[in-house]
Image (cartoon, rainbow, N blue to C red; front, top):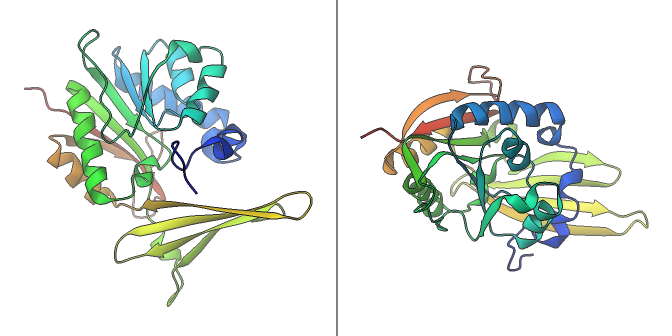
Length: 251
């Protein structure tokens, strides 16, 4: 179910920061911010899908000026309510097409899109548009960083198309894959204390790292680095995600 805030409306926003995912752990956030601050190299950063400020706020505290783009006013309201949140500029809109005025402060030295969010852009044309939009905002030499999972197709049993990824007493979740179109949908069932269940789902389009490299090339960017973690562990055939850095060439 969606509204003007897309799939990340008030129902998701109110509990988003309570997630038990590893990405919300202080150590992982610090590792993420360490690398992003280094790549910003003293310049400004543009966060696509800034959300509640999980990364933007600690990055801003490092002295990196951050501007965000997000479709969800409900998520941004959580950002605004946090210390320092009012000081971060946010443009409301689809990050694949929304533009930020750079006339006053100049282009960005860094843009980033973390936590699998490139897959929430649920068709290939829009994913390509996202790369082109980022390239238009970057200064020469600037970087675009994407954190995204490696598609979990190895986990699909023969003859099936479902991968469960969470089970527990308060709910469960699974993904239904279409390996022809690369479309997929995550389904969540949450169980309340009274035993009643609430179901919701989010569509996405999974994408391979080689495909992202081609999208970057179409946007005039070139691959600079790829790791499996924010601490620069090598990306291998066994990696479950990657941190990819594309650069806008100088000249």
